[in-house]
Length: 118
Image (cartoon, rainbow, N blue to C red):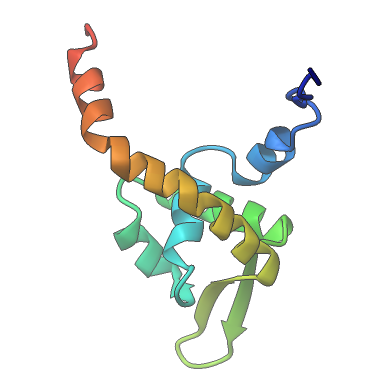
């Protein structure tokens, strides 16, 4: 019988993927722009609990990592939009199964977290 080879953490791709999407905010921000470009104020409304500082930092890092494009429109008042790049769209596609898993198990996870001792 042939033994199945499973990659270790350092070769499976999780480390580089988590370096780009790390923390809870980036995945949520990326998800909110998968259908259309968004302005900064929209993210503040769509991503509950994120501070302005964290949003700025996450968007800068996502732009640096090539998953988000920042476009400045020279209008009065100036307008800035953030959109997902082609590279970022591949990451969003990878998040879809994780989103489905979360939806499928949402109630169970909420119950388990309610049962945790304080």
